Image 1 (cartoon, rainbow over the protein chains, first blue to last red):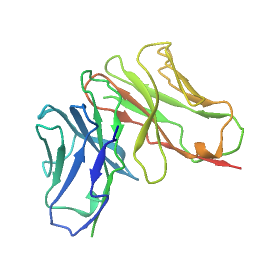
Image 2: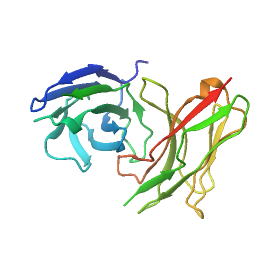
Image 3: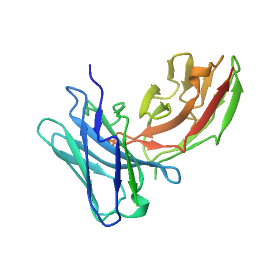
Length: 114
Length: 111
């Protein structure tokens, strides 16, 4: 069974640009979550989607947005990039049937903003 | 709010040594507790979990017991190997479709 796939693995963008990251969940999983990982703030929750609906959202500015498609694939977008957005962005999928379902993580997209 | 506090690292051990990583939590509800592990260059992998008080999660020689009275979920392994070198994260969920993570503990095992 294929795991969670995130593309691309690495991205370099310039301050002020926007970026879109992609995530394909494990087959059959309908929940996709996004997390930001930085050395200073650790792992922080961005948002979670289930059947194309956002069920929970973390404390990030509106520049961070996401969506989920009917095939459960998800994208997150960051507009007007800032240097502080440099991070590893992790996507995770689960069955989503319960609020505490274990998550299966992808290997992440490393975003560098210069 | 919900939060997790775990032992600061880094932790350096010799092979076959005993490993303990302390984890305590505060939660608004009745949380489920998890340990995740992250190897270099990879995402997180679920190591073990416990969903109610006194449950013991175990996997790959690692164990952790959900202690409600002390709000703790300490990770232990009796004999570590070089391959256990990784970053370990304690996390909780209060059934709100998200995880709250601790800061992570870097463990290095020397041969």
